[in-house]
Length: 359
Image 1 (cartoon, rainbow, N blue to C red):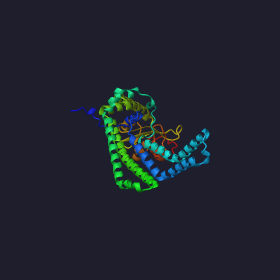
Image 2 (cartoon, rainbow, N blue to C red; image 1 turned 180 degrees about the horizontal axis):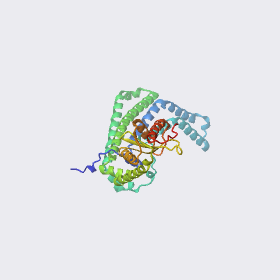
Image 3 (cartoon, rainbow, N blue to C red; image 1 turned 60 degrees about the horizontal axis):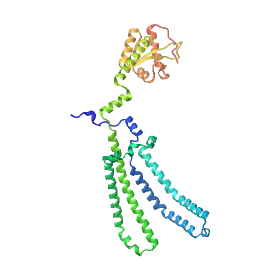
Image 4 (cartoon, helix red, strand yellow; image 1 turned 90 degrees about the vertical axis):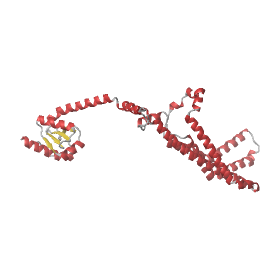
């Protein structure tokens, strides 16, 4: 029978995921950004390509026809080149900004904000030719190579089918004018690029899904790993149990010393117990000396009976005080009238003088 502690059958904990993220181990497809950029570029060229081409043509026309450029010297040539580049950048800047934006959005969508300065350092192990050759034959890299060959084959098939569908127009281009041939080349090129971008986007989405699945499998934990992490996060179970036992003992000691000073213990009757005390001269309102549920409540009742402290059953009041008041706090205004009524009853039973309980 196989050791179950070696099987990765537990989903990764948030701590393990955070550790993996800090090491740069995230689900990310490098092809998704490239496919989105290509698709955006094709849409931009289809929408504004003719206007950009006309603008560039006007720049070239002005450069070759204006009289001030006929007699060229060093300063004029520099000015011409600078002006031409500036105008071209002005027309191309929306496209470049969109490309930069889609890259940032793609990275944010896949991994969010992740800054790993240690990855910027030079790792000599990664440029070791012997280890590099070994990594080339690793299963993930072989799978990536196969995926790359599949992309090339699909893109080639898509382009071939697209050209085959326009074969008659291409063969009849010899009867077209120069402008018509340019339009045919432009439309055909954009059509092929659009088909290619859609295929690459589809493959990139599949690749991202595979990377996410592979990351989830890699992050899964064995029984031993889960126990070690719980021990690291929460401490050794024996130490934790000992600490809790000490805390329970300290709480019981506080109850042992506080409950005898109470005026009354209000119960649920068996699940909850709240010890109340009131001194009109030193306290603005009754306070809770102790409270507990289950075994602690039973301990409070036992100490109260041994010390001669009255124990009264008031279910709604006990539930309200247990939920809303902590030990050492005064009774809130909402329960003050009910507590005052209980204290009056206890004082009357004991024949004591009634304190000023009206609030």
